[in-house]
Length: 130
Image (cartoon, rainbow, N blue to C red):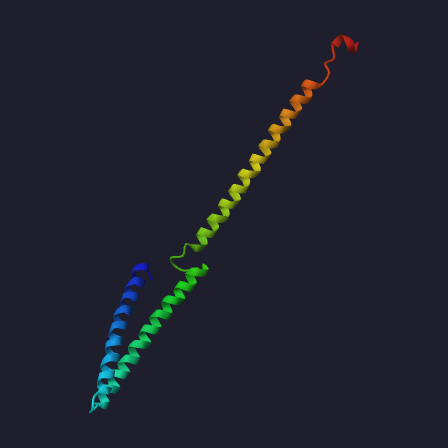
């Protein structure tokens, strides 16, 4: 079910709630009369119950869908798992960049140290070797 279809269902639920409240009002008005028409009151009570059950069913479906989306369960429009994978990959890439930067610092530090060591070493003339 697409996002727009889900919104349309929720809009229908809202309209049903309005009708539900109207049915309840009519039922209460009928019960409040001195001469109550029992069949009419029962019919309105049954209508109220039927609408209430339909609303409850639709709302439960929507809540179940939202709970699936919230925990990252697979469904037709879920991006949750893809976002989690993307975040994990970004974290690994950042780790690689940091490790490479550390290796570069160590290499440069070792190069500087070896240059300094070479410069400090005593220079031996070739005539001294013979």
